[in-house]
Length: 97
Image 1 (cartoon, rainbow, N blue to C red):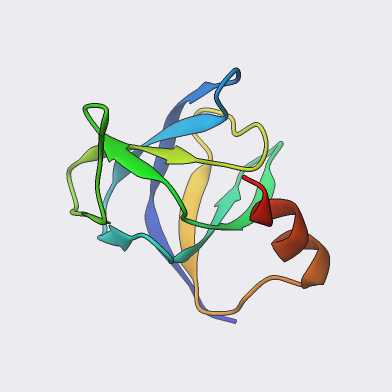
Image 2 (spheres, rainbow, N blue to C red):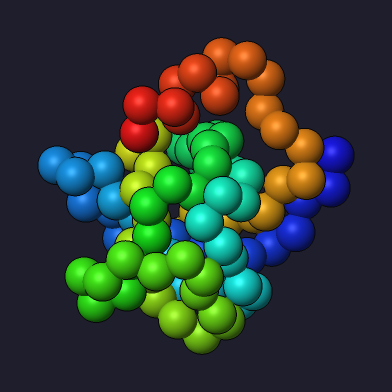
């Protein structure tokens, strides 16, 4: 399983389950991401991504984007793109988000 650094979590909005991420690499809707930190280990598919409250399909390095996540993500956690899909339960849990 190969994972590549994409960016870092800046902030998490709990009520709407959105993490703002500062990107160091491009991200597309449909990519499998992992948020990994001291308190986080989330695997999910990007289903919703916005810049300035406008939905986008692709984000470029240097942008700060809002990404819908399945659970709480802490500031400073690393965001990685994964080429391997997570296990059944992780996919099931990320399906509804």
